[in-house]
Length: 464
Image 1: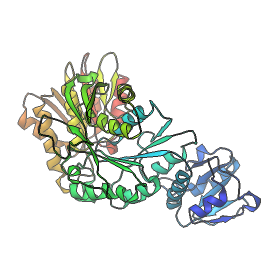
Image 2: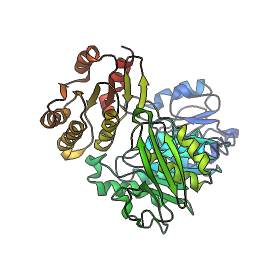
Image 3: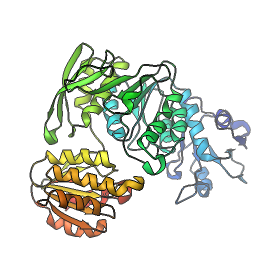
Image 4: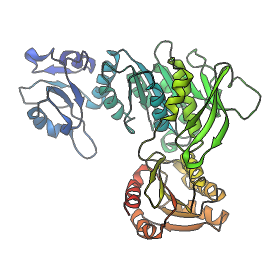
């Protein structure tokens, strides 16, 4: 790691370096919070978590070769350590310091829906020209973001960082560490209403990112989002908008700096074909991931690619080789079934988008759904609305488990009586009925909020 000496790290996190003696100018080779990941000359940050306290593993990590420990507690040892008031804040401070020592472009991505899939397509596009480091999986919070940053190495030229929040102030802390050169906001949906209150509250929380942009940063926004499209200027900058042109008159949103799509062809589970327009240029590309919502992800990636000097051919190649991750519209062919694994998380907008994907599939269409969490006081109405959407899309069969999905199943029964509905109180009760019910040629969507642990459902289906 570049310039990460114990002395510099202590100053960066406003800590007291103790017991270093002649070691204060030694460079850390890595920074981790998991004691099992400690290697020779790593620094271990002792985090107090819900299940365990990192301070309990300090003796072990020194035995495993740790150079030093960052601790909230005074230690009775002769090894070097950095004493701080908060190891969580120290983790973020160290990430900000480390990133400031590196010469690379930073792409910051947030939004209510589509952050991870947008991140994956952006990284795929930029990889056509640059050495790219990206957020792994969903490591996008105040613990995950610093750990992602610590894995950046000097050979990397671009970092694509996903930033997820659930309350006011979190984006300030994340963005102050990331300091994006390019900020991308995908949309303003209905996630985290319990803490953020309304879509306007979500907009306010997400746009905290703009207070921490680097000089001459670019801001890229979904111009089809009714709230994002109102942002005519960001910190004195003109945003770059992207969206779908439905032959409406050109507006400020689709001006000379905009990027938009036409001629969209839904290829079902094989993906989407579209024509992408950039000023007076255009090209045709095929997104290999199903769901028309991925058009927006590809447009965002195009906008970022153009900002960093990629050609249209490089952008096309990046879009056409993009892949998703487990739990994010991940298609699994078992030989018997087609499984649409979208189980990592859920909110009304993403749930409807996944149902749209299932509706394009062959064979019996089976939606396996669970509760959506963190929706606030209107959670039952929002589940009911998703049920109406599923009914209108003509899905053949619904299996659902949880508390709130009773509203969803009720809506389906009221609006599409021909849909076969099976409702259960728990995931395990549902699985007992679901597995023997499935048959050759079925297309199965699995989706719920993360706390429902529907990854177990996917695992059971693909191994049956």
